[in-house]
Length: 358
Image 1 (cartoon, one colour):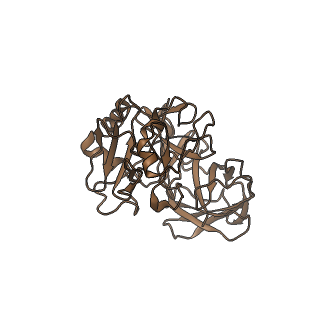
Image 2: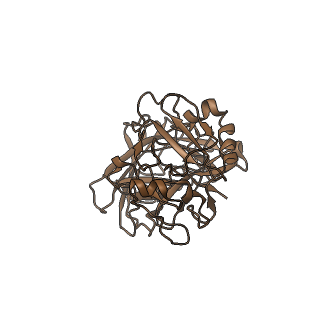
Image 3: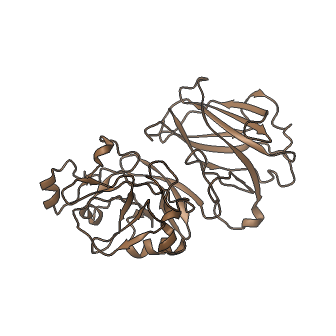
């Protein structure tokens, strides 16, 4: 199945301010396949339906677009200015009943659409958020909406704590969604790069004995991944994190312990921050206590590699390295709402990495 990750939706300044009909809703998206890779340089077809009152309500307007994605899978359209299937965009009575936006995609450019979800459209006047960065929430997992003059906010997890930032691409071409949490901008995904940012390869495939004795950077993947690190990212030893060539893209870095403490403090302290950082997902084993992903951090249970490279605790724990002189790390588990800062560990362990914007 193909998936679509929308990362920016801008509205005309008068949209719904006085129940006026918008002339069009600029809509940008990144299309990805089921493996998380961008559908690049491809003519796709997108169908938008605006439904009345409820998510399965009558279609008041429907149109299609045939954009071609960029080399990063990006495309841009204007909802309301496509090829009309039914209804008229100008004839929508925005002031009567709730309106729901349904998005469907055929990456082959035909009519074999995949339904990406239907979500209520709501307006929030820009004046209430003067000088604010684009507010967002989630849709089909990673749809991010933001506003120009007014905001279109799609309900889901709490939008008040999430502010959208542009995606970032690593040297391998992996694209990461990002989120502003307080005054920090974080990747929403674990790092999966296989090279330092100067292009040198990070060694991998080490045997248990070599993994245990190395004092150089290396990475592995969890044994259940079958070589696929799209979901959880790679697991790096401490030496890779500390290597001066750098793992994170330009303009980003592996955060220090103090920067992680800033994050958990902003989220209310270590006793509740873990739940606010964990994705509500079946990938977390029961009970996934307190999970809400209120922050948008979208933490997943990638487990870890021990000092001989053996995999442990996928589904139960998520671990992340800190950039410090000692092998510090933090973790959250399915069993409580905590996020724990740990002051030292074995440098041969393999943990996930999240990057923070400079």
